[in-house]
Image (cartoon, rainbow, N blue to C red; front, top):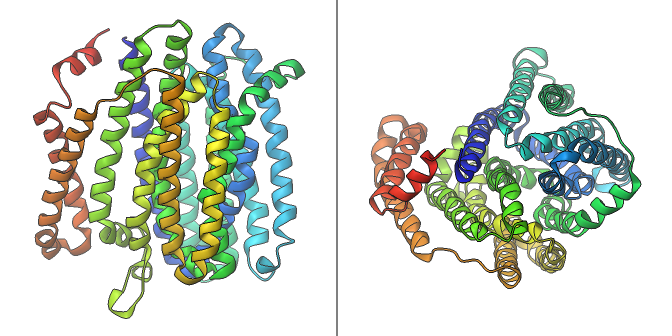
Length: 494
């Protein structure tokens, strides 16, 4: 099978798996928003936002570095994964204990359900990070379809338990039900880990190993990228924390719904680039010009995925939010209420910049220049925190969303410049224009069909408009020759 086909095959399998997981995730949003309301859902979101700060410290970029190390030294795969597993287990245990202790000392959360919720949800984060560690083996071998199966299985168990809690277990007791929804996440994560462990052990043994010299080597490589990820998490998550302190949980609920929806898409470029990274690393190590084509195709793929999401999401924000939540989360502009659909329309541009930024960040990682990400993200964090502190008190989540967009644009620009200075490569502006035109045509069709289809099924018209839009977009890619015979021939080549 050709290199490009392997990358796309591995990515498509992950995306299909993620589509199923995302649909189940949207069911979680529907269940939890109807059950908890704006304020309760705000507390629910805030628990995971709070833990994200500590969870990323346990991550420390070790997944990506592990994939890179195992791609370069496949004969030492059991040794590498054994040591990464030990290192990450220690880090995640320490970080979760720190999170639990910290949350109980924050006065603003003293009379809320957040502290106990953080203590329970910390087990979900622990299990998720351990699962991510061992699935780096599947990523290295380009067999992430198995990881997708494990994720789907865990999510099905989690959603099923949540539905039981809401409709049968505690339909009128939101207090106990709130915590039980978090327990459902723990159970789902445990099932996912057990399934992933089963698949990984067919490839390599999993035993904790403690090679301190290897730890030093891995940490030296991962630390700059890991700190950059921590800074990235701060500027992407701090707004929710500030919103909760300044405006309360209800504002977080409105903003958090949009964030959670977009997070379903934010992992797609990571899936793709984690598939690309082993191939890109080998091509650069072998000093082959093949890496230039890999980068060029990667940019086209990410742009072709991101731009229609932005165009379609912006136009259909209102019915999308309606489908995954309740009318309480929708804007009522005549009465001056801005809902999750407005937050979604703003944040979707941050998602676009984030899609493209992942490519240039991974280029720097592939040539061991990840320390540059540290400086870039440090500036982004300072800008984000200062801007949020100035504008959130008056403008609430509108300021938080806008700041996220500006921050992501800065990160994208700076990372592109840094990657370009370190490695010679080019991207196709003509393909970018073709992709944009195709997405705009799709957007026009969806926009003009929206009033007509609303008359048939009201806001559930997205069930018609999304497949229509996708068909128009793919057709335009062929018409504009963005997808051409050469690309199809490469995909068919064995």
